Amino acid sequence: MDKIQQLHQLIADADYVLIGAGAGLSAAAGLDYAGEDFRQEFREWINRYGITDLYSASFYPFKTEEELWAQWAKHIWFPRGSAALSAVVRCGQGEALLRHHY
Image 1 (cartoon, rainbow, N blue to C red):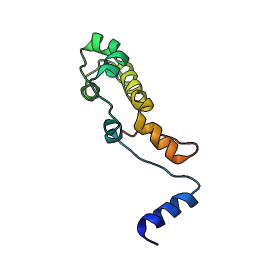
Image 2 (image 1 turned 135 degrees about the vertical axis):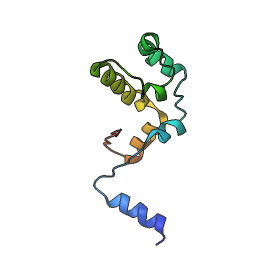
Image 3 (image 1 turned 180 degrees about the vertical axis):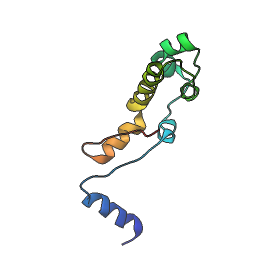
């Protein structure tokens, strides 16, 4: 049995499979960090703070912890509907837990 077949069998036999992924998965799926979806979803932040893209929003010097964490909460949920993340869930053929670590 070759390595790919072994891996396939291990995954098939596993009770759970944890898939870790970062920003590359969203980018590969076509998520535009400054595109129309970003502009619609983050309109309030764009208008209030002048944020121009999802990446630079990560480093914005918010005045309060509430503003900082509100932006991060929105940031984390923003790519959840992307095609790549949907494909990861489908690959799991069952329940999946997607968790971002920053």
